[in-house]
Amino acid sequence: MSPLKPKPRLSGPAVPVSEVYYFCRPWEVMEMKDLDLKTILSGIAVIVSVFTFGLSFWFTWRSAVVAKRPVLVFVYEPSSGWVIRNIGGGPALNIVVAQKRIGGQWFNPVRIPPLAKDKDFVPLWLHHVNTTGIGATYSDFEDRPYTSTCGNDLSVTTSGTRFGPWPEADIGRHWNQKKYEE
Image 1 (cartoon, rainbow, N blue to C red):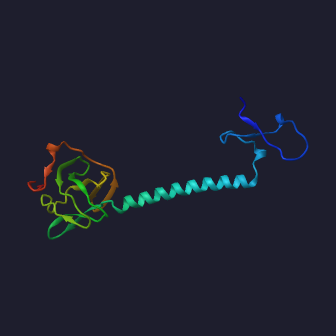
Image 2 (cartoon, rainbow, N blue to C red):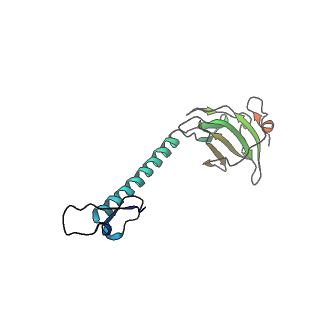
Image 3 (cartoon, rainbow, N blue to C red):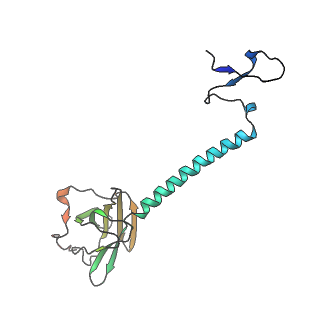
């Protein structure tokens, strides 16, 4: 059974039916001589439309994620010591704060309560420590992980988890964590 069907003729010279065919399936390849300028332009328009739709969808999704992303920073207050502040657009959940010696490993992990947008937490066990770096791993409400670090007055916030995880038994609790002594 041939995939081609005879093309009906309305007028003109008599041509045998076996010599005049057109494609009946859209996935079959057309020859270049069958393409005209209108067909080429409409094909380009469809490709551009699909591309811009995909690009628009991606930017909309990214802006929605960024709008509700938590961002934790470490702020030093001379009166109280270190303060963890959420300057992002959403709550920070599952926060674990840790310390790092210069050139060393992360240590002293402590879990703190969630931080709402524009809220602070004072890690009393850190007080005025200035000989270690400080970092926090946390997630947003859709469980996307983030990491914030501070060392040598340089603050960095990144997507993903850059240190940890620790066994649950090794993670201290903020309400009974002993003050860090250098």
